[in-house]
Structure formats: C-alpha cells, structure tokens
Image 1 (cartoon, rainbow, N blue to C red):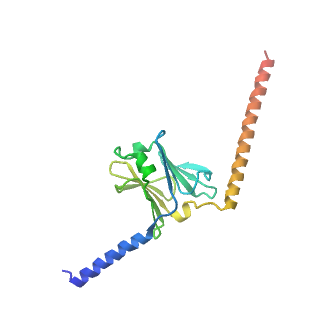
Image 2: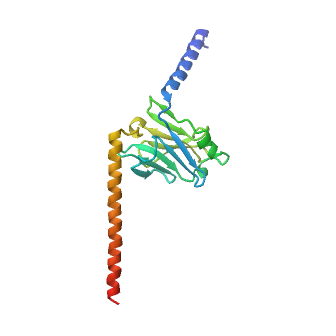
Image 3: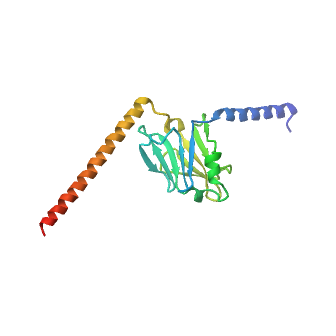
Length: 198
C-alpha cells in the first residue's frame, strides 16, 4: 500500500508528464485544409500555396503526397475522402469551417494529422518511408503520421529557392511544349505524305 507522500509524489510526476507532453506537442506549421465538396477531395498544405509542388507520389491507393524541389512534402491529397471517414461527419464543416489541429511532437519528431477525435486502432505502413496511415476499427482513416517530420516536411522556400523552382517549371513547360509541337508537326507531315500517295 502506498503512503500519502508516495501517492502525492506519483500524482505530481504524472502531472509533470502531462505538462511535458503538452510542451513537446505544438503546432508545427501554418497548415491549410481545403475540402472540395464537388469532387469530395481533401488537400492539406504544409506551406503556403500549391505553386511549390514539383512532383507527386501515390503512397496508398487513396493518398497522394506532393513534394517540392528539395524532395520534402508540401501537401497531401486524399481523393473521395468521404468513403474513408465515418459517414456521420460533416466534411465541409470538419475541414473548412473548423479544421483539425495537427500536432507535432518535438521529442519523437512526429507530425500527426488527426481527421476526427476517434483514436486509431492500427497503423498501416505506406510506400513512402516515414509515413503511416492510422485507421480506426472500422477501417476508416483516423490520422496520418509523418515520422522524421523536421527533415521530411517542407518549410517555406527562400526567395532563391523559389526562383530556382520557377526556372525549373518554366524550362519543363518549354520542353513539353516543344515536344508537343514536334509531335503535331510530324503527324501533319505524315498526313501530307499519305495524301501524296493517293
């Protein structure tokens, strides 16, 4: 049996652990949630604006992660999210009016995006290292975990990085535009050649 002193000491230790957890859990960045009712898609941006997206990777059948030029996550997108969450949730209110408050734990370097208040019962690894999907006992997505978050999630790009990104995008656009024009010209030339055969 515990003495009053031991019990008080244990209670004080528990309160300190709760305070320590609250200190270690903080808002990570200025996260923006956008739920698109017409397409039933959710986009969550870790940095301002989607203009920083350089490439995307499907990490599960329903989850797409967008990366910047430094190969750091700038956003994630979930298609037809209503089929992955409990049917009773008002998604427009949940994501647009009163979005979830993601939590970053400094000690473990884990960034957690909860979609609703029910805790996950299991975690599913994804094709991308450091990203897990938490699911409830019904198989609904409850949260996303980003391990090693300080190294894997993008920060705002510096003006120099932003300029480099814009140059790369312009160069890629010009390359694709030139390639498309060459295909059209070849098809046109081939069609003229086939007319001469008539």
